[in-house]
Amino acid sequence: MAHKTLIGGTSYNVTSGTSMVSGATYNITGGKTLVGGTGYDISFVLNKTAMLYDDGSFVFQGSDKVAEGKTLTASYTDFEDTDNPPWNGQQYSFTSVDFKTEVAPTSMSNWFAGASNMVANISNFSNLDMNRVTDMTNAYRNCTNLTGAPKCGNNVTNMSNTYAWCENLKGRPVCGPKVTNMAYTYYYCL
Image (cartoon, rainbow, N blue to C red; front, side, top):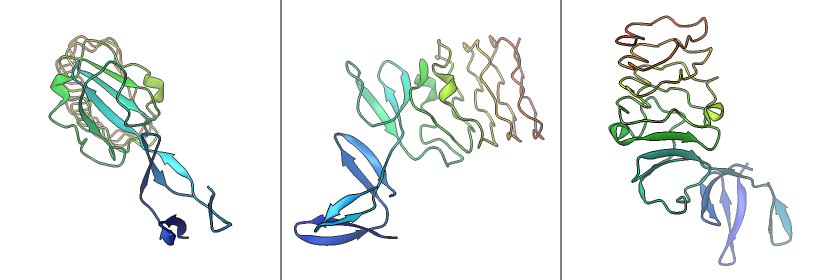
């Protein structure tokens, strides 16, 4: 169903898109708004944004608002349903990762590959929903300073090189029963 909005006295149908409310970007999906005395259903779903700051902190948050006292280097959206993260090639600059909002990707292929400067373990890891993840190829490859065992989902099928060269990794995370490819998963781990 198309939703209506009033712009300059003219009513328009809105079926999808984004809206900016108080500095945060939202997806339009359904809720109520009043146009000409009639209530129309519209709801706002907060867009998730991955923010890379100049100090190397990489933060998944519920808005595109820059954290106080931080300088933004890059921001990324639309990353939950893609096979290749939009920040690919920038992981070397990550010094920390924090999931301040829940994130539910379908693939984690290359998400943190090459983040050898990441000196802290991942914060708020409980906000990473692994239920939809099937591919973890190279997910943490070459995270040489990572010590905590990152969690893995029950629907993962491909773990090729997932923790390769994570030489300080403590423990061996094991994914659910659907894994079919574990080539070099723990290569060069202690």
